Image 1 (cartoon, helix red, strand yellow):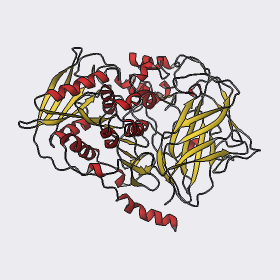
Image 2 (image 1 turned 135 degrees about the vertical axis):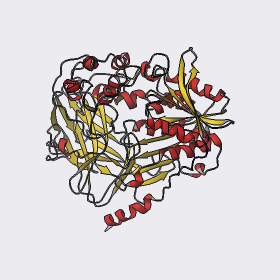
Image 3 (image 1 turned 90 degrees about the horizontal axis):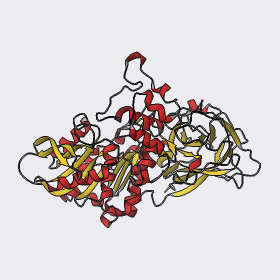
Image 4 (image 1 turned 120 degrees about the vertical axis):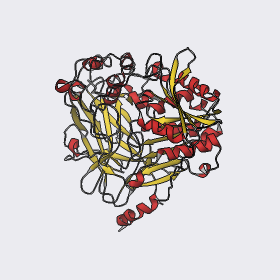
Length: 591
């Protein structure tokens, strides 16, 4: 009866969070195409300017894109939407792309170019001097880069599905290299001035085109783009900088949150590839922002989506209320900060998140919620946790003496295929919440499952796995997934993470491991919000590959991207007193 009551209550609880509705348009729009915006080095970046018809000064919203101001219809919709509601919208091609001059090199010039564009916009005759920034994905990344330069007239920004640290959110996750995204988004589509539009599964070229599912297996990684007929210098640079070094640090907004003094509204999905940026962007600004206005004015909305708001994602339908009108949220935010409209925004809790399982929205004063308590569930077995048919167990009780470690072989030539998780925009892989049973039948996947839950367990916040493990290789990977097992047997992925063994002490401190030595590998599963319902089970899967979402670790310890050989690694996971392996869950106590 308790579970049925919960299901009946969910729609009522969901209605408690009311999202804004955009007010009707009131202005005709004038469009000026190919407006030259000079940068400090003399390079001209070209923008289309959408403004309300007639005379007058207005607040300005700047959006900067590598995808073309002419070929990006959703951003065009945003431009018209805001111009009709009293804003000037400056829509600009970034350096070296489409209409703009200069050399295209992702990220590298967006700090200075963002600053110069914001300040140019503030000086124009149609500007009242107040500038905001808007856009998602790369259009969100550039906002963080501009904010790092602290342009005086930037008042507020709304980065959606965006990275704060390009190294930690985009290029890698805990050192695991995001092969599918980096390759499929990078040299395949973005090598040249004009974005390349390729098919979902093959490169252009007819029936003999090279298929991604063959190309991604190529070693060394450094030569992979040649198979696609590409020669992108930026991709070679990415491979040459696999560690978190100065090449990446200068692009990381997380290093300078304390110097950013404007309110920031992040917006993203639990299954977005940049979910870490959405969460860390809000947490960083709300705790470290340079001004009280930045700390108290920053906000976050995060839903059960991938790279943008939706009702359905992966194998699940979260209900019509899961979809959010992003433009209406942006309008409320910019009206408050750029127009001074007293719309009640300051009276709303700053964090709005979707609780999967309950399928409802909830608001908090902070993230993670203050009443959250970290609790550990421990991995155990009789030494045969291999596959869902094994004896792996997950329990709130710490392991007792007598348990046997679990062992499996990781063969880079037979990796565990990617099935669900946080991915987008690269080579095609099935992202989002997916049933894991097709890969849980493998012997190189350790499966640890709890007893059937007699009461719901709700979690909201960061999740991590502490794995006591050894390998006979000098380097390898460990992958962990948190899984919600439904009464009908479906095993739906909730959160995931990876750690590259050489980065166990930090991505800026690479150090090969000693074969046979036991280490604690901390695997960051980023964060989630999910209720494991009555009749469900909580599960943790452990393996060493997630391909092609992440590159295959060859286990050889060779210089990244240069090796052509692989080694089979023998992996051992321990769960005994003094060597406990666990998942740490952010549990919300029942009220």
